[in-house]
Length: 536
Image 1 (cartoon, rainbow, N blue to C red):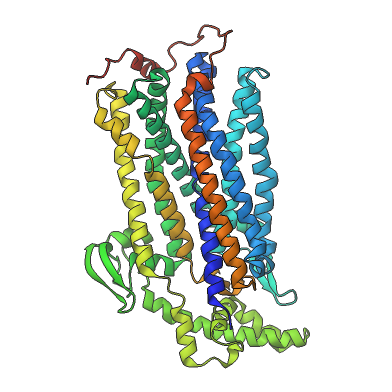
Image 2 (cartoon, rainbow, N blue to C red):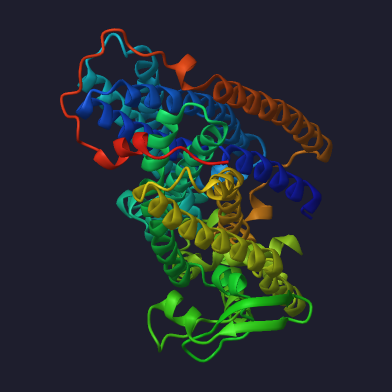
């Protein structure tokens, strides 16, 4: 029997390290592109204030990037430590995007970061601008390949199970790359990262304006971040809808759990704004619904049904029985690879093998499973509904707040009233943690909503864990918590010190600055210099 304590602690350890690592990823994505935009303005105008802006935000980017690298490498080691069978079972598919990410994207980003910091006096303006854009490109490429790997875990396309090697193998790598779930996750995650970068820049700039420091850089930074953040926040909603549509097609149980939809409702299904999911009673208490909304968003039609949780459990029972047939045929093939009849049965039912493996939690020989065990295994396909239900709504609520926030920010910037509205500057400062909370909620929904699968419909999570002793996991978990707590303290101190020093000390002006060749490239931004001083 499988020790579920080992499995749960392995999950907890990976969840903690993954969510800690994801604190740095969104800011890396957002700041890298904002730096490239700022330096582009510097090259076009020749005004040194834009160079100082680029280098100041670049220093904060560099601190964040270093922490992201340190935590990301540890995550990859865990695939071998805590999830050895997963690495064996799907390594042929999962390993390729990770390798490409390291060779093509991470090395690109890391190499050009060095040139970004040390190339200001050694490269021409245009050459250094190309370096900065390559840093941004490398950051986005890193996200692409990681999300291709993760998207395959959500929707395993382009691969089959080989009964001769007893593992999943790639048959169509193009399908893996252009997996609709992976592509939807990529654009949604990247746009959320852009929002994070924009909020970060606006919050620190608002702090400077409230204290009356570094106004020339703070005004321009807020102007760039407001327009960039508004476009990004709107795209998050649009691309999030695409991600939800992909879940409707490929992860029906996750969608039903997010909505707390226990029974299939008449199309178009309503959206539950509020409710208290009761998993034991298989219903929601105190529901507040908006008619038609869920059906229109999730299916983009008025006629397509969204299956409820209990109907999906019945489908899972059917697939578990097919998995029993595939498993029995596989056992015969292990004894005799030339058994034509067994191979024919396996070819017809191999796609249900993963569902059959859910029975391994209850007995070793799954072909002898009882009806009660099959029912329990089918119910295991339902994740815990309440955490998913509320986490999704927290994420969505923050997303709509940020859209409203950036609309107001953009209006205040374009009308030159930003510094007079100190209440908004305080709102910008206190909004700093919100995009991180939303990003962590999104990551939780994506990963927790996939349970009980480590690879959707292919490999149960409990079956993928390494056979470690409970003591070993407790020791490594305690070590990770201690080390990551120390790293968090270092990160915060470095960021605070850099912000306190400000852009003038981190990015001194060039002595050989030439007059601006184009003085009116961004007239609205420059006009902020002459805005009335704030009162109070």
